[in-house]
Image 1 (cartoon, rainbow, N blue to C red):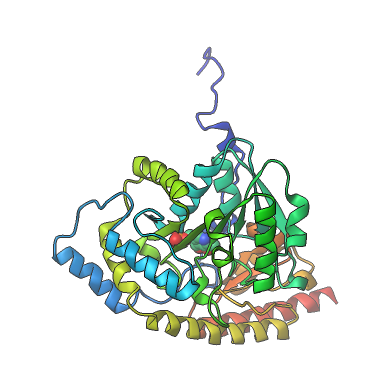
Image 2 (spheres, rainbow, N blue to C red):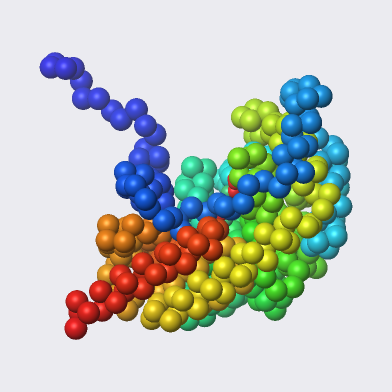
Length: 395
Ligand code: PLP
């Protein structure tokens, strides 16, 4: 409008600086195409097990359609406490130390907002889940990446973290098994990081969303190590292990004061998680059978995809958890975005460029094997053809 004063952006400055998720960006392109085989989505291809769906239907039939306590249904918190004691060997008081949230997504946001003063630094390992740096910035904190490398199986050690700790470091975000690398830490590595957290008075925010999809042995959490429960926020949920993404259900566990602080934000912003989903989650925790069945199916797909990728000259570390293969595509001479776009364009296969998971993800491709074996096999045929063409064109 002529003569008007210059218009300031209506969007908050700090939001303008945060890029859109690289995954969203890429899938906007994928959605314009037909017949794509997608290894792109980080979501189980299994439908939620029947007994869990039935429990949610039964909740509706009984007219269970109200709000719940802000903390969530007590019977669900009690079921979670028993489950965590049995599987992870860590005990939480269902009355004061557990908060039911809308997915791990909300738990993560609450955890960071509850502890972050402006300018506080949050360490996280990279490549990592796309939300971590963004959530820290939403809270006016400063995300600090610690790069991990495929040559070291994307492991994180005390020696890698320590140089990044400053007087402003508030917390360390951990996600093992990791999205997008499938990395899992050994007990010794967890112990080293725990010792550092104790010595430097760091809080650990541990995102355990893929714990049930650990392929060897029982899942391990840093929260169960001596002196760590009181300085760890343990975040978990039902999306991956129970194939319940659409139920939007998660939880946070930690010391009563931190859970109370998270509750304060939750009660004003979310009020509570859906009662129908909470009823379904009580049923989900009654048995491990479905989770183990899905984990074993992912394990078979993992073995196949990793051997295929290595066979085509894309070195791929064996993922020890989650459902992602993260091969190096360095030999192609293309950036990860160029590679993913070209693969989509020429072969109609969608994988996520590693750069979407931070600078340390460059040179990689995330291939989710939460897809049918038929789709994975066909995707590998096409990828091999693509790789052969690429290498012929460089000769
Ligand atoms: N944390 C990680 C590491 C994830 O990969 C995801 C989803 O992909 C989430 C959290 C979000 O989980 P939810 O569906 O429980 O919000």
